[in-house]
Image (tube, rainbow, N blue to C red; front, top):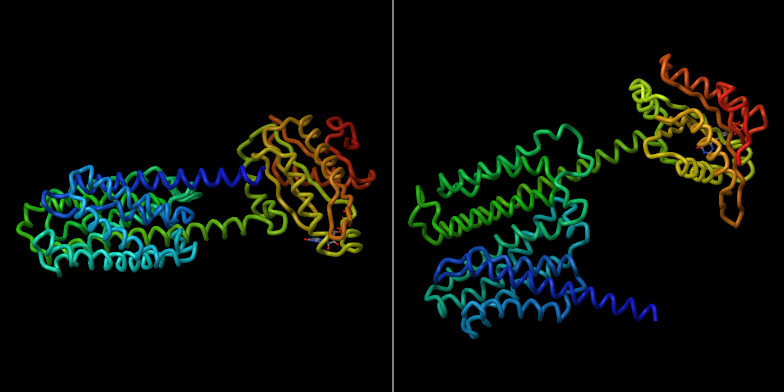
Length: 477
Ligand SMILES: Nc1nc2c(ncn2[C@@H]2O[C@H](COP(=O)(O)OP(=O)(O)OP(=O)(O)O)[C@@H](O)[C@H]2O)c(=O)[nH]1
C-alpha cells in the first residue's frame, strides 16, 4: 500500500516536471519567435537550451514522454504563431536533433562536472554546444536554400552559431542552480560587503556603453564587469548576468543597434561577432567556478584550523580567542565551565583508544545539546573541555552544568559488540558579574580549581568557585 502510494507520488512528480518542461520550451519558443527579425531566423532561441537544461538537471524526465512533450511545445508554438505545418516540422526536427546530440554528449559527464563544480565543465559545455550546433547546422544547410533562398554554407554557419551562443549562455544557469547557489553571494564569503553592488552597476554601465558606442568590439564591453561579478557573486548569479549581457548583445545585433559605427555587416562578420559573444560568455562563469572552489577550500581550511577534528568543538587556541573577545566585550553576566571526563584513562585501558575516542565524541554531542548556539565550547586538551556561557546568570549556569552532568551520565556510549559504556563528567564553574572586570585567564583558573574540588569530592558533580552560588557541590539529577 505504502509502496504503491510512493510510486504513484513519484509518477505525479515526474508528470509535473514534464509539464514544466513543456511550458518552458513553449515560452522559450515564443520568446525566440517574437524577438526574431521579420523574414529571418531567430538569433536568440532559448527553447533548445531550456529543454536540454531540464533534461540534464532532471534525468528522470528524459523519457519518450519528456521528449514528446518538448516536441509538442516546439510544434504548438510555431503553429499558433502562423507557421506552416511542413516548415514547422522540418525546423523543429532540427531543434530536437540538436538537443539530442548535445544531450548524448553532456549526459555522460560526471555529476561534479554537470553541477559546474570544476572550471573545465565549461569546456565540456562548449563541446556539447558545438556538437549540438553541428546537428542543427546540417539541417540548416539543407533548409536554407529550400526555405530561405540562401546557400548551404550560410545555413550551416547561422544555425551552428545560434545554437552555440544559446546553449553556452543558458545552460550554466540550469546546471549551477541550487538552493545554496541561488543566494547572491558565496556562502560564508569573507570581507566587507558594503560595495558588493558595484560589479552589478559596472555590468549595467558596460551594457549601456555596448548599446551606445556599438561596433564589432561591443560584445566584449561587459567582459571586465562580468569578471568582477565572478569575483564577488555566486556562479548562478554570474551566469544570470552573463546571460542578460549575451541576450542584450544578440538582440541589439539582430536589431542593428550597432548602426552608429557598424552598419552593413556581412554574414562572416555576424558569425564572428556571435562566436565572440559565446566565447566571452564562458570566461566569467569559469572564473566564478574557480573563485567558488577557492572560497570553499578556504572555508574548509579555516574550519579545520579552528576546530578539533575528533569532537568538532573549537580548538584550544580558537576558543581562547573567541572567549577573550566575548569577555572583553563585557557581555555580563557570564560563566565559565571546565568539564572533565571521569576516569577516562580506564576507558582507554579497558576498551581501547577507539572506544575512548567514541566516548569523547558522544560526550561532546551531549554537552552541546545542553548549550545555546551563542555559547562557546572548546577542547582544551585530552578529555578536558571549556565552555563560556554568555549572558547567563550564575543560578542558570549551575542548572546548565547539572543538566550536562545528568545528560552525559544518562546516555551510555554504545560500543561495537553491544557494549554500552557509562561515562560521567566532573564540572567546575566560575562567574563574572557586572562590576569588577575579570579576565578570561582568571575565570578559567577559578573554574579549573572548582573542577578539581568536584574530582576530590567523588566526581560526577558540579562545583562553583564561589561556594554560596552552588552551595558546595551538587549531585546531578
Ligand atoms: N582515546 C583518547 N584518549 C585520549 C585523548 N587525549 C587524551 N587521552 C587520554 O586521556 C587520558 C587522561 O587520563 P588522566 O589525565 O589520568 O585522567 P582520568 O583517567 O580521566 O582521571 P580523572 O580525570 O582523575 O578522573 C590519558 O590516558 C590520555 O592518553 C584522545 O584524543 N583520545
